[in-house]
Image (cartoon, rainbow, N blue to C red; front, top):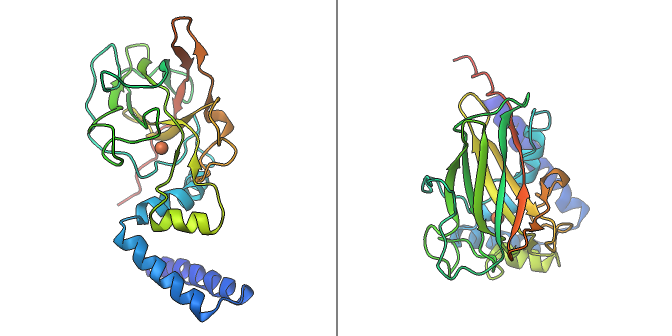
Length: 256
Ligand SMILES: [Fe+2]
């Protein structure tokens, strides 16, 4: 591993050094950057910064040749151990949850289209105002988070509300850096999923709502055209859309 560390850390530092020279970085700017590193740590924002500005390249590069459906970034707002729901599957929500009701359904298959029974869909999303439970004030713990299983034909169905777009936190150092560069802090409306089944690679992905603003300017650069969904009105004030997931076979474990 030391060869790898030598190569990778050396390369990253060399590129930082080049950027300093090419941009005539001053001592004041270096000191400001150092303070910013400290601020990010003290605010607990390294996961946010990494997932917003770096993760998408790791995801695109790691899975460039994977079979099956497209994935995208995990992001910093997933919580493990969301409750496993009972059919009919409806994400836990407040009695007066705002936002357009929607149902989404589809199939989970292997890369050849064979249905995967008892596949697990771990679903989490912001509310209609763009707030995640446990991370932002407003929604109660566990709101709009849950795990859903496919039936014998690999079919699933989830009832929820259409989430709203949201900004990364504006008050913290990541938001301040984003503002300093005059970049948009917005993420388009999306639903996160991890789709998994025995013998298959878990698929970490997001479904983006086609009517949302910011699809072309996602601060986290996570939108892919294959992940945009099209909710249609169902005539009762709600919406519905479909999405099928195809999972790649599990990677062969490395030899010990
Ligand atoms: Fe998100």
